[in-house]
Length: 90
Image 1 (tube, rainbow, N blue to C red):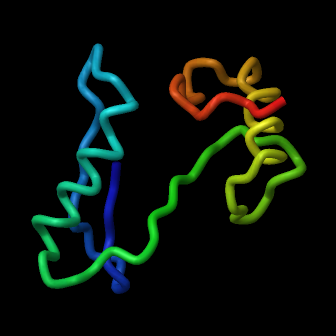
Image 2 (cartoon, rainbow, N blue to C red):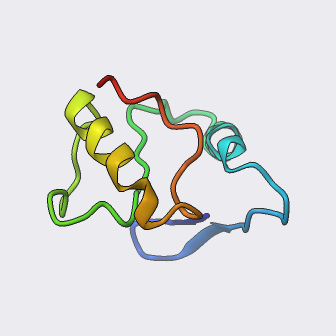
C-alpha cells in the first residue's frame, strides 16, 4: 500500500506480510487515515483493482454488473484477486 499527497510526497508505504490476509487491509487503511488526519472527515474511499479486462478502463462504482464481471475474471489473476469480494449477485 502506498499513500501520497497531492504533491506526490510519500505519506505511507507498507507491504502485506507473508501469510497476511489481504482482507485486513481496509481496516488498516481506515485506521491509518483516522490517526493521520483526525480532523479530516472521510467522505470517500477507493480501491484499484487490476486485471479487470477491457470493459473497465476507468473508475466505476461497484454495482451488481461490476461484481459479476470481476468474479468472472478471477481466473485470470487468482493470486491478485481479492478472496473476500462480496458474492456475485448472479
